[in-house]
Image 1 (tube, rainbow over the protein chains, first blue to last red):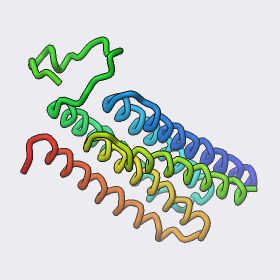
Image 2: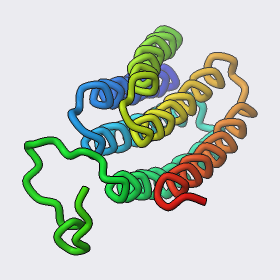
Image 3: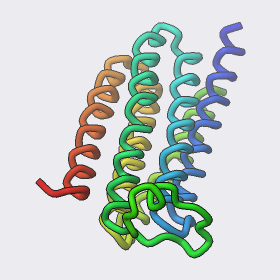
Image 4: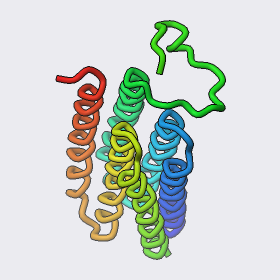
Length: 112
Length: 86
């Protein structure tokens, strides 16, 4: 049973760090600031949460502290990405030519 | 078995760190660099987690929590500064 928990925890860790890697890849490959925010925040949040879950499987005694870190990350990561996206829009960051719709520009008339 | 998976995860997290660091150095605008900084801190939290696992010491999780708090405050402050200046 303990060996099974170890293997499941290790595989969750591996999946989490793989998502971190994909987030870094998106951060390098995406064409403009908004796409980079999306790739660099969502994928890394999922990766960190999966890593926390894997650590909880490996050391069940740490579960409470890991849950605290996970809840904190779930609160703060979307907040910081939203504030960053608004700052980029107000500073007039370039949009990729494939952009289809920009509701904030339609609402406020601010032209990036 | 679990040790091998932990070390493999550390290698993949290091590769992710290098990718994000590339964007941090190259990033054309300031917002790109702040996004890359945010990504670096998130990868570092996972790195602290892996260090705690490798050493078997739960006290490192407190370091991860405080680091997450401070990096969040830093990103918010820099984003507010880029938004409207102090």
